[in-house]
Amino acid sequence: GENVEQHPSTLSVQEGDSAVIKCTYSDSASNYFPWYKQELGKRPQLIIDIRSNVGEKKDQRIAVTLNKTAKHFSLHITETQPEDSAVYFCAASMNSGNTPLVFGKGTRLSVIA
Amino acid sequence: EAQVTQNPRYLITVTGKKLTVTCSQNMNHEYMSWYRQDPGLGLRQIYYSMNVEVTDKGDVPEGYKVSRKEKRNFPLILESPSPNQTSLYFCASSLRLAATYNEQFFGPGTRLTVL
Image 1 (cartoon, rainbow over the protein chains, first blue to last red):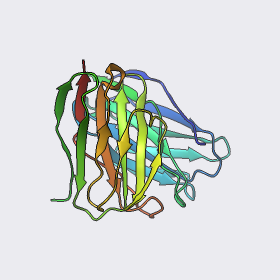
Image 2 (cartoon, helix red, strand yellow):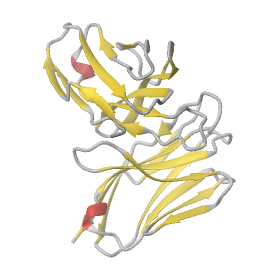
Image 3 (spheres, chains in turn red, yellow):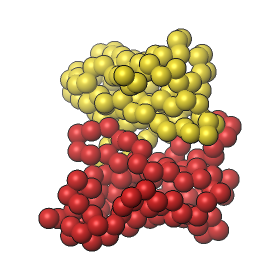
């Protein structure tokens, strides 16, 4: 089955700097890659996702890139702000059939003011 | 308001005392799932359900049971809880597993402590 590795497990950046979180996956059939953000004491919420027919997707300060050949995808946050501090989870699945999402172990991002 | 609800939000219990954590969604979603979240281990799937009367084991199903008698409800049952089931539990739902837009909506979480 699918295995998703996520790095780093913790990340500290200065406010205004960029943050990058990387994930690799094992199943070349996976074609759906969402990212979830979990603020302290809250539930995970989807912030951005990408499908295998595109290589990059942006939404304001957040972008996700996908390299299907290398089987890795990354979350990029530019101009980080204190409210970006949270745990971020990547996930992968086949967007068909009955294959559930497989999550990475998460990255705790701290943005230092 | 479209949402996933869980009850209770907090529960302290003792080893061996059966308990049920309820999960309900009002979005007519076919797919529902239970996860447990432990420090350093991320979100691990316990059980999932593709639709009514269809359930499957996730990565860590031991010690848990589920049922899906109605589309909106997906209770998690711990027949004989043990301390290693102390965790934060999340229920989630999405339209269907193979949908084009299959964002998973999470419930608020249930923090369970088994003494």
